[in-house]
Length: 236
Ligand code: SF4
Ligand code: SF4
Image (cartoon, rainbow, N blue to C red; front, side, top):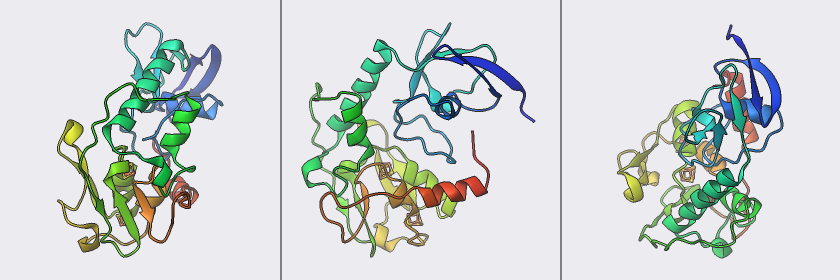
């Protein structure tokens, strides 16, 4: 049994079991911490850097999803500094790819777009990189549009950890990073894909979508995945 600990989040005294992440405990207590890569039940990777929080006595911000709670910790989830950093992180995501919301299947149902609106991102202060990256339409049921991918790796983790197929990975580094299917096969030529659709439903943007949906029509359904991860025991 994990040891019981006490900590403060935004001044509120909270008693909880140890070995859990700050994000998990904070969300459970009604706090708002934005995130795009986190998905309950999947391993935490700290990829999007939106869930940063301040911890008293620590000189840098920490990702709440991959920082465990500790006894006596004092966590701040909202401050001018955090709001500033989170906006920068979102703006960089927009600048790094070609997010043209007006023609996206997920327009109006996109977590990236929703968070940008919620956090007051009204423009991007960084030069757009306009990378030349394509789409993969070879799968019989689904589409991959790398222009809209934010490399959150939810698809990678859900496919490997829940479906057990491990079709996806991320190749290269930095701005050259790309989502790849089975050592760079076209998705339609995948040997392991079961066409279950878990990656599509867990994708926070329009990067992965079902075929046959037009602009604004694609909504994602994560509840069935949550039910599956709950059955096998939730990760911290
Ligand atoms: S459809 Fe299922 S098996 Fe195929 S890539 Fe997506 S999650 Fe993996
Ligand atoms: S395709 Fe979607 S789920 Fe996969 S890494 Fe890109 S944004 Fe995340």
